[in-house]
Image (cartoon, rainbow, N blue to C red; front, side, top):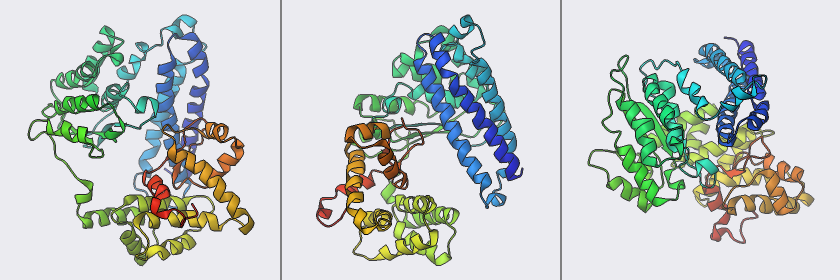
Length: 439
């Protein structure tokens, strides 16, 4: 597949995604209690659109001919386009009001009926959930097991009959206790598979940042429920849980039977393993001279966030890769802490781009905007930040546009502005820097 035809396919799919978004309002008017359904579908379509935009950038890049997977994208994009076309037809307001009124949670069973994806016996990521404190459904368990069940259904059609039966018998299952959701949407469907279609390797489920969910009793209950998947056959699960070592989470793991889990303490990973992974990442992202790669690896270990921040800034608008790399390498001195090496090159570079008589104003605005982002318990959108600080939204957006390497800033005005990594907050509020750092 050449880059031009691939990009055209991506544009076609994005166009259909936009059409689907335009139908939400009419659906919300016609269907009672449709808000949650709309939010769920909108999130999925938004994720697809974001991924496709990234793919388009990849197809437009000069390195597209080096990508071994590029030739398999065309058929996948076409399948995606057909799926979205089908969804567009289901949401078509031209249908009768009676038809639309039935398109509630129960009618969404078509999602489970029509998935025909081959697994080819691969052992890879099949389901995931990323907890995020203060992020609505990601900050609680209201969509935890239903999200995992939906993801698993996409790769293992054998569980679909059991899930359909559950939805037929109880359309409110998503509001039931965690134990009921787990047993009826995950455990029983997987145990109900009589025989695998072929040799099946483990399905990997990733649960990220479990510590971001603060209800300790529920957290320990989740771990106990997940432990029951240990001996599921013929489709085994392997569940990866990432978390800070909070006490209640450590206790939750200790309550599991012996042999149920294996732990991996991040700071105990061998240094050579970290060096290898960071080197591969930097070579893929930057591809500079070998000596520069080795130096950056040395500066990065053991913090992957250092390598990620450097790469994000170099790829951001208006930065010179060569000049910035040289600037980064100036922060090798032992007097700089690991966090200083991570964030000072970015912030110093931003400050140096300001005219001398504008630096004081820039720093004041930086403290107001970024300071608000790092201290707020619940992330706010750019619009809300502008109202809170009584600053024009254009000025807020202008400041945020230059901080994509350290902040998560969406193209949507309503999306919350978040830290990409908590270490940025630690860097800015470090009491030892008081009176020494301009930031």
